[in-house]
Image (cartoon, rainbow, N blue to C red):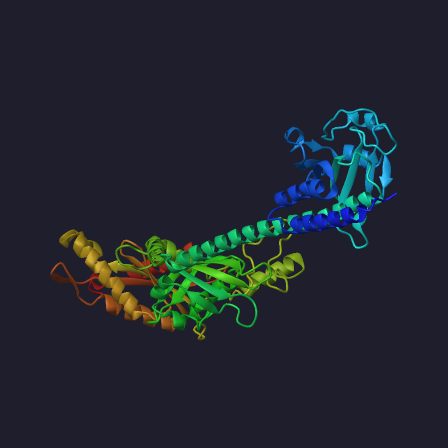
Length: 551
């Protein structure tokens, strides 16, 4: 039977409950929220002790996160952990009061073997049916808020309560109040956890932004003040390769202002002979050595290295190009290559370079139709396929091969002057040179060789080769000449050589003997040179000695 004061007591409890719920939702942190939940059980629901067990998201077990009502018990169990398995067993036994779980002292002995943190209080046996026993347990599970009610979400935690102040089991109103309180506490804890996660995310985002700003500033300074050239270009689309930004070092290297550089791509600046190298360089991070044009029309050798830079995860990509000046290194490399292939005294191509140039014009194919016909007759089919490649007959390899895109070198036939053109090889040997060395010394001899080289180079056409074979021997390669043309060239060169030469303060003269050979495919470079050399000696022996000295 209700007393007259009971409605007033319930109204006061509702006011306290409303205030506690407001406090839960205005707590500054998750820890404050949990403690407010525990304290509210004491102040608004009429229990002497309360404990909040919170599910740890990563591990899944429950930790005692807040305690209220008994400082000794609080010191004993706060921070202790109970396994999820033990908690699931507890929540599935005892009496179900809606979402609440009540385990009477008569079943409490079952709980002695689990690891759920708990406190023990002594007291006499109940004197009446609904009297609270010190070993009674009442749990209010908290679930993440669901659409249709408190039990629709996942377990968030459990509120444990003990020792109602009236000493009795809670009635219908008390049970409903505790269940509603657990539901509101779950909302408050979820919101507090969300706020904490958002705060952590904001702190992390701010740190990332600070790091990004620092990184961008570091990149800007590294880009602007790099000692070598740097450029950023568009990647993809209609403007692929267009230069967007350059640093001072690149502008100084090319002698172009930054505003002008933005009108170009590297394909606009590269040397025409190097455009293929640029195009073969992978835009995904390739490198190449090529020449870039300066504003004054000259070119500079650079090492160009590309890297792809993404503006964002799905944003546009740009090409970061590092340009290093390698002019000095390239000049040294070219000088070394020139020294390896040219005579140190006269600057003319040396013997190795001469043979290389001559060999590049010769394949190992025989040049006479009779030779091909004899092979056809011997083996019953042509010696070459439709593409000009040589066949290998029964393991017998011909001494020549077909070359794709190769124009065969053919010599004018002996005894005929039908206007045929070929590659003439003029072997030149100086007459009377040894006597100059003997009489005036090697310095005078060197001066003669240098001047002869200069005169020969001046007398031939662009594209012809004048080489020093060694000693006082020179060789001229002249393509596209007939027999009469070659003879005229030999006479013209001899007339250049026999003119007086100033050496060591005196005028000296040397003569020259020429032998004319003809290169044709099927011969080696040495065979061609030997042929011209032999003809030169024939010509030298056929001339009187005095005539040879006089030229």
